[in-house]
Image (tube, rainbow, N blue to C red):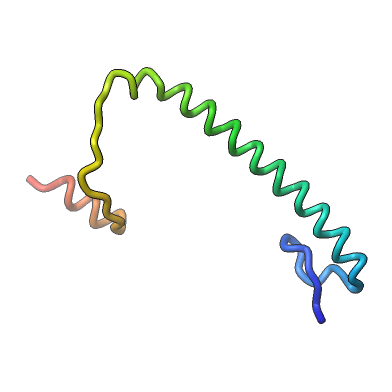
Length: 76
């Protein structure tokens, strides 16, 4: 049975090593989540004046390739 650290596959050769690697991974993951949350707060604070000035309603949401978007928005 292969056990692995998600960042470095096939690094654990025993269950106890896998447990330790999992603990390390969970700490790294939590730090990443904290960092992402901090960036979201900064972004939301920076965008607050714009959001206060504008009223926007989403009518339709569509995922499309960038080239198709550029073509659609640059029609003459």
